[in-house]
Image (cartoon, rainbow, N blue to C red):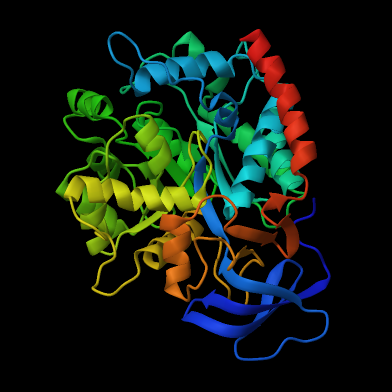
Length: 459
């Protein structure tokens, strides 16, 4: 599915959220998948596509697409208590049975669901590289090419983040057998990146980054060797679990985020995923570097990670975005809602993140996540000339949005709506979602069902 059609397309929105705020009667012209002009206060012209409430598409800055296939299969308690680490063991057993066709089918299903919820670009933190026995495929980028094909098929924008994974724990510990499909040395990873560049050639607006998996999986020497291999975004899991923090301190004497800042030049290219367990000094380092914090509230709740100190970070002007991570539930509005609600529960107050009195929580969460995800994914955003023609339309007749206006639409979408509030989605100037359903949903769902039955039968 080409992302950037060459034809000129014009929208006319009754209402649109522009960088400067809400505007009425907005004519939006795009060509080649890019916005050419955005003009408020003008009448529609013949042939314009009518929109009711237009928003810019939101970026999903952290996804492991294949995990959509295991959603709901790990919700069984254990006698000694369940945790991230026991979940990870189950995840390794699931991925051991995934072949390339299944990875593509599962990823495409996840991407369709992302588009239907209002995500128009995904940062795919892609670490499943090799055959089940750990042998590289003849094409080292076989699995990355399947991710690219799933993005192409669904129409979602792709920032591909191939993952470097070499060790089981801090200090270069030897990997365990369950990790054999993930592993590279630096030279092999450089070859993988070359293959990824080839896989992305058919997608004009695709972005290639790199993802050292975590400080558990990469040594300082390897990290230094990886960073010059690519100029795009750099994403890393960090400080997600207290056990991880304790192990890092035992190994190095430093907490993970502090260790990273003292051993790497962290800047605006970086996205620190989760960063759940950080202290005040680490928060200040993140603020000063202008790096993005990648928060995944649904997954962090599902895994029992804990809560990032979001209010302090927000008050300091911190940059953040949201991601669907394990894809146990894919819903852009739910990520924003749970981000706020987690902080409300912790701080025992309401509307605790919006920085000033009278500021809409829904709009603040949406706009801040919009900008943070765009930075982390290496793209521009917003309904403005030069940005991708990624447009999400809300349905003003949805029960949660009736008789609202302006910021109340965003507040109601984030905090009061469920399925159906997103009416249409256009990505790169191409219509992908109509009346709340992806235009290829049935075919994609059939391939997903066939693939998943095969995987689970072998599991």
